[in-house]
Image (tube, rainbow, N blue to C red; front, side, top):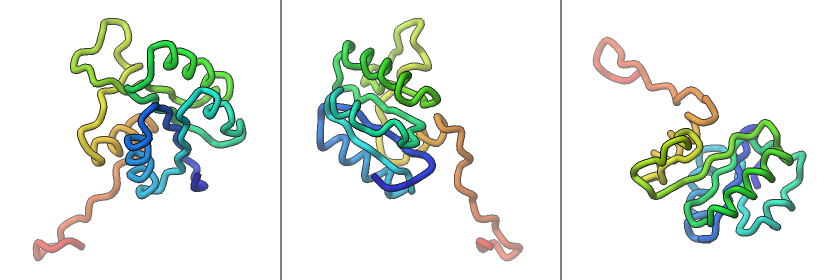
Length: 132
């Protein structure tokens, strides 16, 4: 995992999906750890600065519940969200589930929103209409 102040843990069953998400997030400067099982998740050191745990839609409800409990004990300040393929959120859990992203930009936007980060600065046009 790359050293970064905003580290993310991805937990899921599909190696290709996790590897793609890891690549996208690391290319934006995030430190990313991956776990395919609860046992692997438990081996991530407690002193790793995990700020966000994303639970893949490939996990069973029982695994999601266990992973959320493990997150709260190992990284009490971390945000834990489950990704879902559902287009409608069941009542009472809005805010705990996030729709799976349609692309890399959506994933980065979602992570920035969850971590309450400012979006990248947009260049201001100069008087001649060119970016400054």
